[in-house]
Length: 174
Image (cartoon, rainbow, N blue to C red; front, side, top):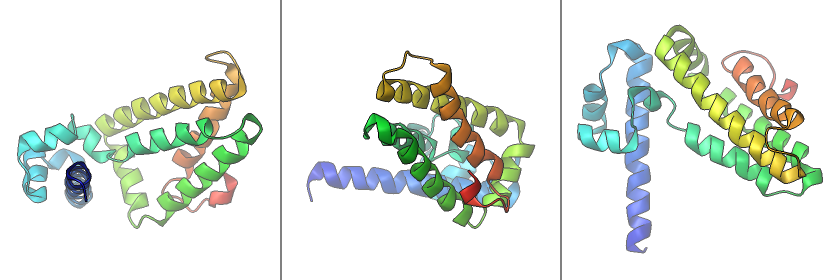
């Protein structure tokens, strides 16, 4: 393994350890009852290391959002224009299935709903995903930036996943 490959693997492991520790503590005690120092200690990293990976406490609860957003837009960019809707649907169904299989999905969704800071942060993240996906869709089909149909197509699946997260609503309904 190359040095850069080893370094990337170690960084990914550290990020995962921090994110896992944060989520475990948040679900056990509640977001507002956990300090970033406690998360760093639980992940066995320094506070500065924690902040190298996660710039805010809120970002710890949404540790996979950047990867999801990147994968979502890549899905659209990597297919032919006539395949965009099908590729987007396949990605969303796969993602929603993964979310549904997470053993603490309902508790996580409830924590976001009852924690104002997390709700606000989550909305900002989803708006960023929506903007990026709208641009990717417009590029893929040759529409103008901000096209209302592209924005609608971007918003629909994201809302579908959010609305069904932690519920018994079947994934196929997205």
